[in-house]
Image 1 (spheres, rainbow, N blue to C red):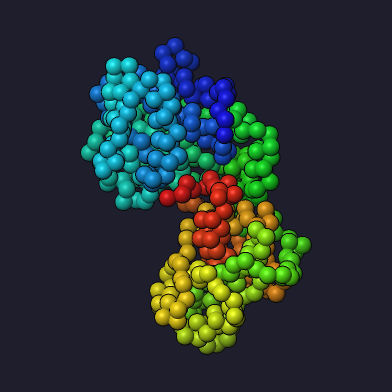
Image 2: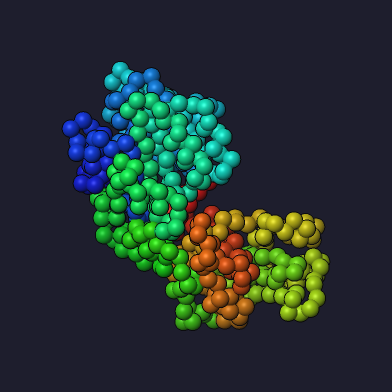
Length: 417
């Protein structure tokens, strides 16, 4: 990506704290909106410049969902640009500390990951002159509140950026809707606010997403999930098994004892993964349960004489995984973050990189029955019904394609850990 002159909205982010600016009296800023809209770069650069110009010998917090994602998505972009402006910096990775020197000022920036509720304890007891929370909608409320409470130095400010979630999300209710009450400057970004994106790239993002993900990541709306999860999937997307040789094979598996067990056989041909066959067993419907050995036999029958690179298995199926390994199968525990996995699956299905073949009747049945749980107020959830083939398809997309595609899918709901 080539960086061009900043857009007007990016310039507002870069200058809101400068004396004489109309927004100078604000105590916080929120930048939310579409993916690739230029908000992270502008906010990160502005945060560090504000800290270095306005303070000396102070501490600041820089927070992401994980420390690794924060280094990759923020620090690796911002620190080299600070160096280009004449700043120097050094990092102590063991202490998660970056010290920056600029125009005679020196400040310390502590790095934190806000992965879950327990993360709030990591940030207690320290005093900040300001805090930057990157992808704040992915962090628990307790962590965010603790980070904000640490900012007690005179002149301290709060900096937030995120992609949208649902309109019931606590951050939307408390910081987006009530921005004025909190003396917070809220700036909503679209892809048009990023001058580095070409029209062709914007069009590609519009093709990739659908449904709730299109509304959130392309339009930048805090949109409610509703209806079918894969609402774009139509019968004409189902194809016959292609003729010719396949280059590689995997089996994905969602394991159940009382609940159904679903296995899918995936073959690679000319850059496309085809789900060519399936095994599906519902113990309730059959009025009996299968043992791990019986499931291992079913998996062997599904594989036939094909060389299976690996079985992508439900990570909670410890006994079945052990049984498969004893039988000589290479087993990989699946990536199991639901929302990001659903997004990846939708991206690949819509782009034709994953194709469901005729004969996968149980997966196709679940595709129509797999819906969002609209009763959940805390965060996006899918109903835990008709989701067994859906889970193993998601395991395959997140664990195999998500690791080997070279970044084809536009990953934005959750930054990778």
